Amino acid sequence: MGSFNTSLGDSFILLSFSDWPQLEPILFIFISVFYSLTLFGNSTIIALSVLDPQLHTPMYFFLCHLSFLDLCYTTSTVPQLLINLHRPDHTITYGGCVAQLFMVLALGSTECVLLLVMAFDRYAAVCHPLHYTTIMHPQLCLFLALVSWLGGFMNSLIQTGLMMAMPLCGLRVLNHFFCEMPVFLKLACEDTNGTEAKMLVARAIILVVPAALILGSYVHIARAVLRVKSVSGRRKAFGTCGSHLLVVSLFYGSAIYTYLQPRSSYSESQGKFAALFYTIVSPMLNPLIYTLRNKDVKEALRKVLGIGRDSG
Image (spheres, rainbow, N blue to C red):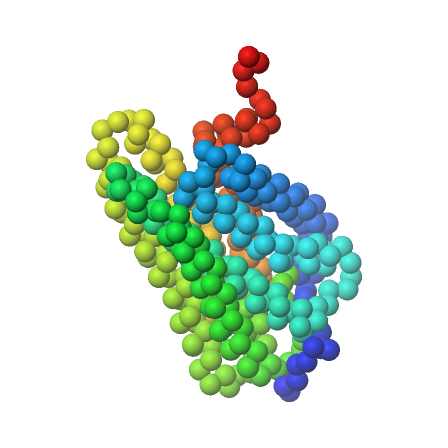
């Protein structure tokens, strides 16, 4: 197969789930429902975090950023997927594909760093409770949030630039529901001059290093919690930190599976379903995981809705 030139006028075909046509109507319904729940759940967390002064703490400041990030992340892929599931034309322009690739990488990389920042916040709260407000002062919180966003977008800029510099061969067909790096790499010509290796190292740094640091922080957190004599205090610490650890496991597990495989062993079919998990299911579950057992958020919701207020 010969190589082809790429310009803004070229288009790619996104196969989405056309190899399972019987699944498409069911997926359309489920993904529409999940997307609606994602929009509602994450928007609610952002609104409550802004409206209730009791939630003006570092934990909810970062949770607000995570919710906004999840809204952007899922919106960068799901509308295109729903359109493709609803119509026979599955094309996307080269420019649109590169823009989607850049945004997915940028937002995913930002979430990697932000989850690490949230783990540091929990570490400071549990392991250094007396100095927590001194450590997590507003300027540091703002700085850490900015580092998360800038780091994610810089990583995406580097990887997208490397991808665009690679020659592409064969048919302009992507066996996926959005323009994702592992599938894009399948179109690259064999002679990539080590570019793929550089990209793999970059992806390993953005995924493995934060995951290792998060696990390390939770080892210290677990030790500190086990030293707490109060049963209610221990339960509250485990509840808050357990929620964050569950979110971390869901996100990093599926992302590492997808992005740290070499091109030769990457399964496009399995990759599609793994991508459904971290682009749709995980952003929908995050608000539930963080709020289902969270008394502060429930109380804030009651206040905003005017439920349970004293008539006098």
